[in-house]
Length: 138
Image (cartoon, rainbow, N blue to C red):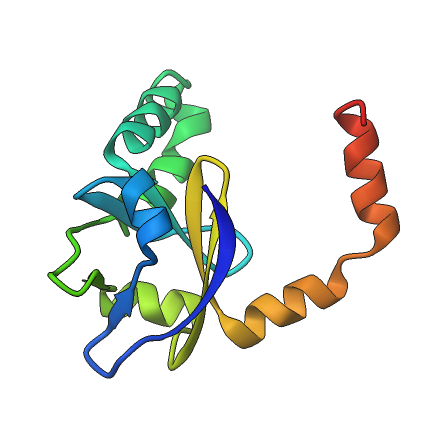
């Protein structure tokens, strides 16, 4: 999954998920808290992989991950217009009010408040990207 899409979230918490991303996510998917103040969206299959990996850790290492990801997770099914309802607690966590950026990040989708997304990108430097590329051998 890849790409960046600008959308508005309405007063009822409904957000349009782009067809390109929805096709990869499937007819039902999971939205949960993410890192850096965004939301993570997983297909059912990717969610199961995450659950399995976390459950294989000892409880001493997994309990915080379990609490963070699983307690806030919501099952979502797009309506006929391709919108999903983002629960209030998740909207508050990510600061979603009106303008939203939806991005594809390989194996997941992220939902960002547009201003937060811009601020995050403003903090990135060519040097930090270059160092990360070197870490993967590019």
